[in-house]
Length: 414
Image (tube, rainbow, N blue to C red; front, side, top):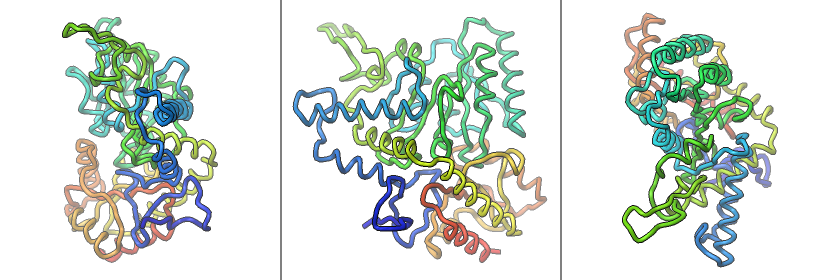
């Protein structure tokens, strides 16, 4: 049975994570392990599991209340404004696809080439993809120049949406979200933040960052029960066709084929039976994080990250991938290559011989990963770097011993 390898005593804490003894999980950026808070919340509700918004019985009433309380808790945790919608989705990809369906006709979406595919592929034709900048300040300058040119060449009445990540899923480097939001708003544009990789590592607040929309995945945030959220301004969402046409998304259905009045608010885009357990699990983690010392959690993670990056830098056959300066702020994600070794083979050996799980490939960010692999070869002058990379990622429950085990295993490949 899964156990809690990092628990210091028999008393479980909400932010302890589930794991399997002997297995080292350094693949948090793909899917983080389940927090005890999420598991406990689901276990408590399961005996009561019933329909949401569709019954008068005691079970249904309790589930409906739990679902709407989860919406409020998550919205509060992320600093949702009073008139924002908090819409449950499957994950960040689903949330960004929902928003892509909701943007008004004629909207130009501006992204950077360093985005995850979830923030590159859903946007309509005519979107603008800016090159990957060399530093955070360059991202701000490039966006300002692009929006100036865009406004000069199009009607100022046409909407513009800037879509940007909070932290790269390839390098862990943090992006200057608040500065990008100021530039966007100065040019009359809105901004959506892909917070999938930022939210598990740092506080994310819509008001503080001044972003218009925010997308998050539960499975990145220690709540692996299939829920995510899109939070943001109501007008575009209420004017758009329902993301899923079906039960719950309507306020009236008449006898004629198209005699339908669609609901407003989150229900408009939550057709069908909702993912109650996913919503409750995510809310439980948000509550636990809100009550925790997030500064202490971040300091622990940064110490582990420094240990990991320092150890990798000391291995002459390992090259770290990066977009910005080595000292740029980042979360607990590091991508690297082992010279002379195929990355898939390295990941396989780490798993089979050392019980260490890492990710290999291009991390659903192919344009960025390929660019960084090419840049690493040019920076080091090595011709024996593989065409794909490895990624180690840490978070709640990660330990120095686990980092050291990875470094020792990589040293054996030298």
